[in-house]
Length: 314
Image (cartoon, rainbow, N blue to C red; front, side, top):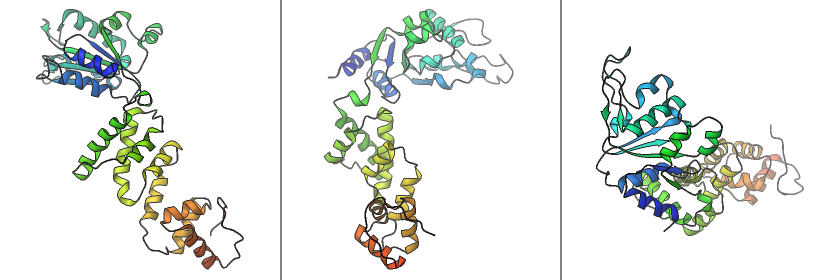
């Protein structure tokens, strides 16, 4: 068992605060849900909040809630996320992005294990398990004055670092799991991912981690029906080509005739800057057929059919 997975299993059996650390896209929320699901609190709610998306005008009542009539527009009582998580797990994602004034409120809640809703005169006890996640170095944020030191030590009880995808040796299992989930939702059944495609995927470093891998495989699941290969999708992903390149390929792959219309041939050659191999692949014809069509329609003496020759088409 991997170190971080073992730590997650150990943490799940307790109720102490957990701090999940790792790059964006490594699956920190998945880890938080795993901890909740395998904890004694799995019958309670799992409440998630993205701290980077907190609206400033709602921050005051967001954590602790508000009584009806406590401010203009408060037509009903607002529960707040802490009371909503009572008996379960409160997951604060991107905790490093939480505003300082809200950090103070959270610190008091953790110290007193109670909330004081806006407009209330008495505190209400709460019982929840806290799991936080961040892709920031919180110690550095403390030095910059962006994060409270006392709150950090309240959160950093059981830290777990989730490694990036490029450093995990279970890549094949992750890719299979993601692909099975995607095909089950896309096609209504799980479709095996060939070993050669898993090997192809494993050669990339995946800076966006599992989130990026999922995006690529979702794209492939939709486009493979139109003869777009995984190799083409990966090429577009890592050479930072325009998304329109895939739509170009999709448009040309839809042309099934053995001899496409000359207009399409012109456009393909123009868009691929005279590269006959790429244009032929997009048109779904052989390179030899493409050269024949060029000679046939241009009525010129073509010296060669070498790669990467640029031609102007009117």
